[in-house]
Image (cartoon, rainbow, N blue to C red; front, side, top):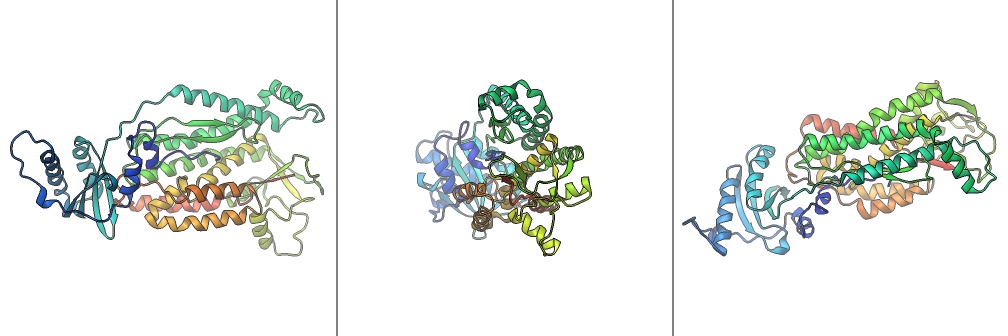
Length: 453
């Protein structure tokens, strides 16, 4: 996928550096495992210094219960079996500030060889101890560096190819050789797009490091010969975020940081681009492409050129607002014979940055938009994925690429990232930030990204 989603959910830490065999336990733990076997009566008095077998387990239960009771009104304690996905569960009502309570309890559970989870089910809080502790492994930074170099070269090639003016009626190999000889012509495009992707990924990276969450450096994905020379980039968290506040900060930082760079790049590129009359007919198979529009992109073109572009030769007897709504969502009718902006390579990179942001902010699953949706609505966010899936299928009639995205949403869109502490709510400032993120998602969304001839 473009700007391939970094594993910012808890699944990321179940891979290298995660807990061996914990994935199934984690999935069950998310459900806060219903059914209980109260063990109050099985807790033994802590006598002596050495305990073995069941007595040792009971001693650990005592240690954890003493700690949990300092922040929670405990109603029941449940010993978990391997199939439950937890070793011990405390049910009741958290009395203290939940964020502070998690920070207080986490070292105690870690000392007992468990990962701490806060969950809420049917109005009751659950404190879960899951066997195993995350041990983030060091990254192989040479891989990040090699991929970055390959991606830069791939972008240079795509940038040079986009401005290629040589003969086209020659063998393809000759075209490749000619483009390679003029790679320097791809520098404006490559540097502009790479700056946007770097800002996006390091937005995630810096936010994760700021919260003390172990994270990899960005992995850039080269895609030679494609319009952009890359399929984007991703980072992977080596451990799950602590709570929804941290999840939001990490998830939203990428798109916002990318936009901070993409918008100036786009405006500079638009200022360097010219507005010209489109031909009345563009032959099929000519290789020409019309870029799609978002609300933000239309506004940027209006700011740069003082008119809505593309400007059709005729509105076809409909009101302008009706024409623009129809064109925005269908790409039809084509504005052939009208006026449009011919994008400079820098503007093309800026537009690509908007596309990357729009795809990442689709509110589903492990995408950045999915994180924003989840921290706002919790488990109710799962209700949205069928709507997104159907909308993408409908948009696929205008741009077939949405069928691929619909398939991805169908397979992965129902699984949202959950933090360790899923009880602590967003503070007012972050709630406003999350709502702003959804508004940005609407403004940058490109219903018909490309129209190829």
